[in-house]
Length: 321
Image 1 (spheres, rainbow, N blue to C red):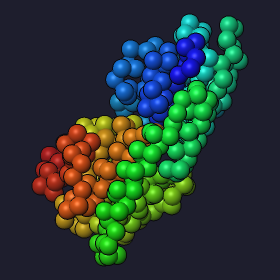
Image 2: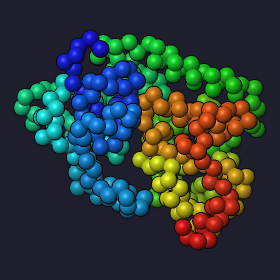
Image 3: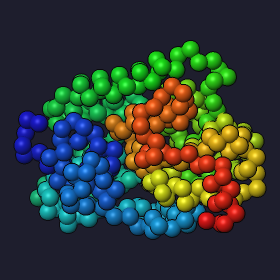
Image 4: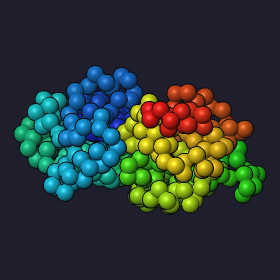
């Protein structure tokens, strides 16, 4: 970093991770309440808070979100007092999803109230892996740091995954349902279908680059996927396991092919799949381990993902846990 006077507030976790990967962690002077990686940024002042109760059930959270949006309220609030104190020269935010993080409009309103500074707003809007690469390059250019090595490393890891699945026949490419939300039932979209397809899966229900869609339980049952992966936005492994019980209690669950073959997985969707930054390549490698364990063994199992075993699923349903 050429200019030591740069002071960055990042209001989106993926932006924070991009900055850190580019060697700019020391320049971050403020963060969102959800920015928790890498660990060294956790002592920076928190500039946002959520207007909803994240401990509620998936259905209750969805209702809270809808109520806020229908009331023309943002889901997140920005603490302009803290922004004033940290005096940012730059603010990193996003203009993709009002549910995922503070919206660009909210940031612009907050900045308009700042007296001492007029920070530059950097808004990220990735829909595909290539967009993430472009965001990394753009952030590097803005702060005059070299992004070439980082991008080369990330792209090389993607190519390794692609090369190792070459030669698989169509029958060896499982159909995959990625569950982004439980109630209502939503499927992963944007870069998720792209990641699935890159490592030898056939993504169901959504197309690369398109927003997440709601599907019916009947649609999931009718598709009878080979693999089901839970990756709810904002939830870690433990919370995902807890919420997955909503589907495991349904009578048709036990008859699903993925359940009968032990190919139902839970993941830390908060740390990986829902953060369009450098760790999307980790997410790709996690998918590779789940879809083709005979080929890939990166070591993510147990921390980033786990099998939701058939006997465990049955026990959960019986005891209503």
